[in-house]
Structures are given as structure tokens and as C-alpha cells.
Length: 221
Image 1 (cartoon, rainbow, N blue to C red):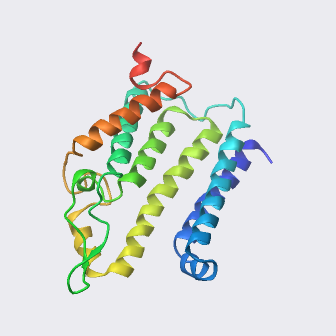
Image 2 (cartoon, one colour):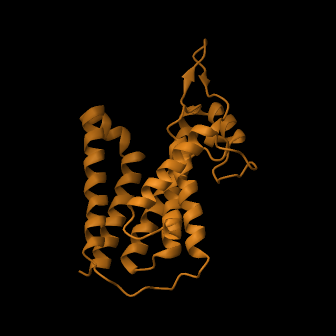
């Protein structure tokens, strides 16, 4: 099996097991194994499949590029990576979508704040933007497979979260969905807030500094 095919096989397994363990198999396995054992199995499978994809990608060696990135792709990729860092940092700030219960045991979800005003799935969209930024500038076959895998996992996974929460939370989730957007800026332009902006900028600068190629602001030196 070629390195590209092996990368695709591990990537497909990563997405498929993530979706299966997140939805149809979650409750049956959690009941049978117990919550902690299920989480351990979930993490082990995710690590094995994602790690296998990266291992296969590393073994591909230099490959022919599927296309040559246009000149604008590099600055656009940098902006998208910066935005991904902001959404990722903001996803760790207090999340109003964490469910609480009111006096009558009704489900309560707070008002959207920070990056939640941009998208209700900031972490998933941070992964998606990272994937798009790499698709723009790195067109080796196996690299495209890795980026496409992350993109599909992020967007389909976010949609699956919406379906699951609508089923379990009912009207409270419907009201939250009405105030937020699946797509970034789907409800209009919004600022992420200073914690997300500063944290995301730090993530962007560190990630691009550690990158094997000079990218982002470090490419200007």
C-alpha cells in the first residue's frame, strides 16, 4: 500500500471511529464499559488512528504537488491560521453553552459571549480553518489527505453535536441555536474579546515560529 493510501486509510478510520464513538456507540459502550473506561477506549482509538495517519504522512517523503499555490495563498493562509488560534483560545474561555439547571430543573443556557458570538463551535472551526490554511499552501498528496481529514472531522463533528444536543436539550438548544451560528459570522460580525484575541495571537506566533518552514510573520524576516 502506498504512503498516500495508508494515510487515507488511517484518516478514514479516524473520522469513522470518532463519529461512531460520539453518537451511535457512545451510550451502549459507556453503559457496558463504564464512563472512565469508555473515555479511555475513545482516547486510545483516536490516538492510534490519528497518530497512524501522521506516521503514514511522515513516511511519504517528497511528493509531486497537485497544484502550485498562487501568491495570495500564503498571506491568506496566515490570516486563517491566526483566526484559528483566536477561536481555539476562545473555546477555553467560560462557555455559556455549558448546561445548567434552573429552580424547576429546566435546562438553562447562557447568552453567547466572546467567540460564541462568532460561531457556536469555535474549537471545531479552529481545526477547520487550520485545515483550509494548509490546503491553500501545501498540495502534496498525503498532506492534502491529512488536511481534508481534519476538515471533514471538524465540520461533520460540529454538525453532529448540534443534532445530538437538539435531541437531548430540546427547546433550550433551539433557543441557543437561534442566537448563534454554525458558520463563523453567520449572525453578523462580532469581536472575540480580549482573552481570545491575545491568547490566539500567542498561539499563532508560537505555532508559526515552531513551523519547519518560515511562515506567518516569521516569513517576513
